[in-house]
Amino acid sequence: MSDSRIFNKFPTQFLFPLIIVILVFLIYPISKTVLMSIQYWYLPKKGPNTTFVGLKNFFHLFSDKAFLSSLGKTFIYISVTVFFRFVLGYLVAFLLNLKFKGRALARALIIIPWAIPEVVACLVWILMYDQEFGIINYIITNFHILHENVRFLEDPGTALPAAMVVNIWKGFPFVAIMILAGLQSIPKELYEAATVDGASGFQKFRDITVPMLKPVSKVVFLLLIIWTMKDFAIAYLLAEGGPSRATEILTIYVYKTSFKYFDFGVAAAGGCVLLLFSLLFTVFYMRDLESA
Image (cartoon, rainbow, N blue to C red; front, side, top):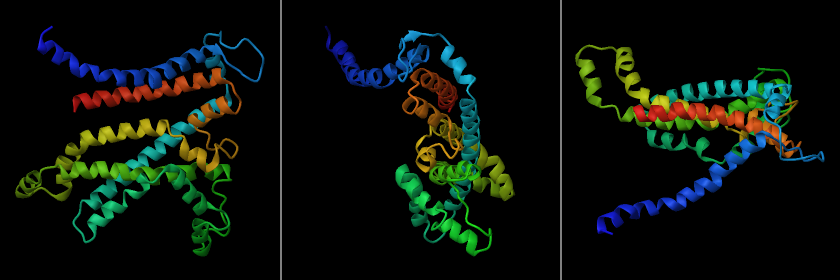
């Protein structure tokens, strides 16, 4: 065998550990989940587990009001949090792109919400949301915005919005950092040429900034959707899906169906539905990367 052929095969050998990891920790779990979704897997009841049932679990899933409710809450959760994280991140990025004293410190501080662990973030917000001693209720009552304290995480009407606020607060710095990087990559010569041509500030924004930021904006937007779709920790740590299933988004529904009710067949079907939605947006994301 020639030295060139040995040299060509040598780099591929480094892929074997990665392939093994992917097979063990990605391909096998996904395959097992798909298989369980078409089998009977209900541990509390003595029965023929692993029996093939076809699409019965999926029919059960879409006839379950709790699942349909969690699907609707997931759509609302994604729509609201992605929109506000995107808008807020954009505004912060433009502010941080301006020249002002302490800009370097501001850029460092803005990363903190995104950098701290979700458990710590949720603990801080649970204390802030506290009905008796939370700072938010203190501000609300002392500034006479409301006459009584709000049970943010105990009231079904406010629990989901409260979880959304935490998600937005934790996620917008990522958008700000990415858009800020995009802003700083725009050549200054384009703005100088536009100034010479008599373009207004709005025209510069419309004809230069927006088109130049379009590629990074699309990538960030799709990433936000994918990440939010599989979000679990924030809603669960704040209220464990409650009260009265008010914060039970799809990931929490699948988790509870598995490890609280031990109906692994239906839970696997729910996981497959979540996987299909995630794969759909992942395909858009990969296409966008290829076209960039």
